[in-house]
Amino acid sequence: MVAFIPFEKPCNVPISILKIEVKMKISEPLTHQDFLGSLLGLGIERKKIGDIVIKSFGAYVFAHKDIGEFIKWNLIKISRYTRIEITEIEEQELELEEPKFKEITGTVSSLRVDAVFSLGFKISRTIVTKLLQQDKGKCNGVLVKASSLMKEGDIGSLRGYGKIKLQAISGKTKKDRTHVILQKYM
Image 1 (cartoon, rainbow, N blue to C red):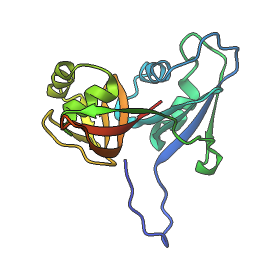
Image 2: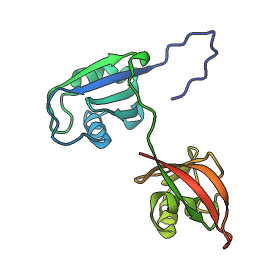
Image 3: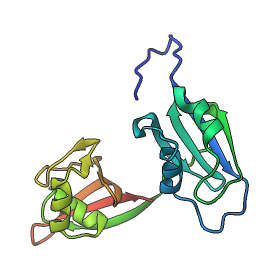
């Protein structure tokens, strides 16, 4: 869901921000999959749930306004944890950190998506190509082919492997390979 709104006009965006706190000692950290599985287990369609931001206390869940109340009254556990508290909060109450990155430097034979993804996700180009053929890769939010080219600033994602940003192209090597700096989202 996206809204383009002029600054002078207020708009009622139909999104609920739910703060889900686990009120028990957590033996191992809860994952995005734990929260999403619990929400989908309520019979909610995936398209009604937006981002799930994992925090030390639990998570923030962005959901369509029409199911916010339903989640508050019906979600009774996350994974095996049954003592949870759900509150609807306003955007200014969010406590979010800047994304963390791991810098990856290396060389690629070209700026093709398969070559850059192979370096960034530490998997072979063959595997990357197979995943891209299954529509599991995107660049700047758009499905891409292995032969598509990337440029500085592009953000690529591969389902199941994460997200990278082509931070910089810093020249050629003697063997005509391209030296790149990537940032992998942590």
